[in-house]
Image (tube, rainbow, N blue to C red; front, side):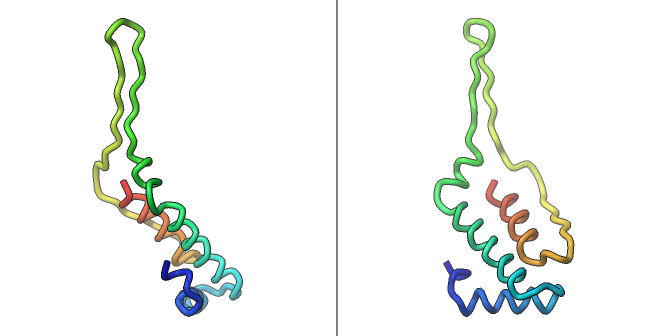
Length: 97
């Protein structure tokens, strides 16, 4: 993972610190949160988000099925004090579906 490399983590930490008046630890924490979130959604976790479901009905032969499909555009409005974490997590969550 590229965000796990020290020089890239430091680069993004410096960028965040230039935009937002936060301490080094807070800026680095934002990069670490994004890295851990991306790592947790790699593999089968994204596939499990769009899983369908089925429920038995009250009568013989009756059933309910639900399917999760993406259905439109995405717009992310975020606060200025989290320039990497919130846009990254919200945008990629929408794109994963």
